[in-house]
Amino acid sequence: MEVCDCPWAAGGAPGFGQTLGPSLKLQSEMCCRDYGTKSVFLHTGFCKSSHGVKWQAVAVAVTPDAPVLSKLRVHKSNQSLQFLEDSRVRVNCSIASQTNEESQHAVLWYARKGEAGEPDELLLKIERTGAFEYGVYAEEERLRSRVQSERLSPRLYGLTLHHAETSDSGIYYCLVEEWLMDPDGAWYRLARDSSGFTHVVVRQPGVKLQLEDVVSNMTVPESGSIRLNCNINSQSSKDSRFSVSWYVSHSENEEEDDQECIFSIGHDSVFGNGNCSPTGEPGRLQFERPALDAYSLTIQRARPGDAGRYYCRVEEWLLNTRNIWYRLANNNSGATVVNILEQVSTLQSVVCSNNSLFYFVFFYPFPIFGILLIAVLLVRYKSRNSNKNQEGKNGAPLLWIKEPHLSYSPTCLDPPALSLHPGSVE
Image (tube, rainbow, N blue to C red; front, side, top):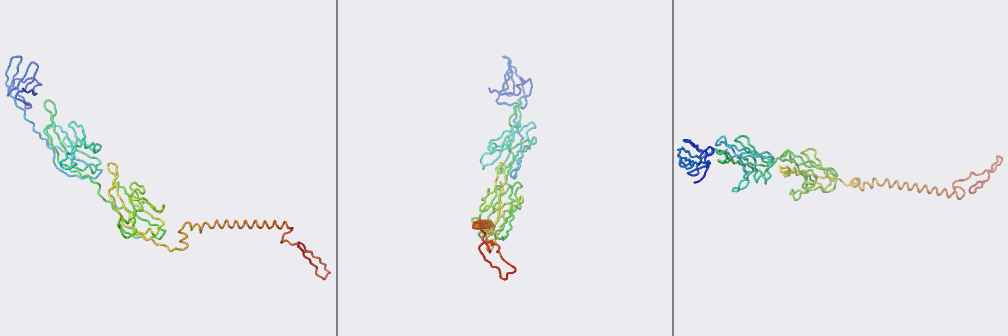
């Protein structure tokens, strides 16, 4: 005889004429329960009880337990949703009907990422008690910090993905379990039903990067300045950052092999952290950013070799939810054809174009002439002092002549006699 639980066991043996409710579950033709000194037997609609060795037959109407039919239904409408990267993705799970008002639900959220035939990934499970349990996929893909599920109403549940990434694209659905309590107070799962599929597509922002593409011509005199502008007309996102590079082609061929990168600045505002590093003579290139969407490059002291076709290339960068920069788009501006007007070589142009020669002609002669003049004056001064000293030693200066001595008488008709000697007159 198989032993089973009888629903009336807790209340003792049934009395005469007592009807057993539909919750009675028969697992065999006989069901028994020991009540100390009494044993109650159920057999084909009759319940017999015994006390000691005395038996007494009691007629009892027995109604076998009918299986409970589930009325659980979950909405199965399929839909497709598109979201931009870094936005919030929301998927709902709605219960259309349930068996009774006392039903409780457990909700499991799944994501279908792989090819057909591969198992679906469990994101998380909400127990009927409200406890959360994350799936292995959520742990591996670092979704735990971004995924959220909540009970919006007794029959409506929601799944939210914060800061959506392109890798979050896939098919999402929920699986609802209905739980009921049996007469013994134990919860058992009555039925399961799944929702429709929600196809989620997370895409990067639409490419809206546009540059000024006007073709222009510029004639610059030699040693002048070449100013190259690069203006951004539109961008894909307000959070975009840009990497800007300037290229030049010295031939009419516009193939990339003939293009030379002369300057670049990265999206992190680091010079040379783009497509090329600045080369050439230091100080000739001057970079400016007069506005958030405007850049300019000035080539100073233009040379004949600077002639060519110039254009700028802009790369648009965005930061994803994992704080990693990625390149969204790139675009080229219109070309600027630069012609250099060579100057005729003159003495002035040659001198002015060469710093060393300019200083040699206009600067160095002045101190040299000054030194020479000072040297000549010193030589003459020393020579004069030397001559004066020499004449003083010989007796009288060479240029000093004493006044002649005249013997004159007013009555004398003859002129006076003069005799000249060095240093005296007699």
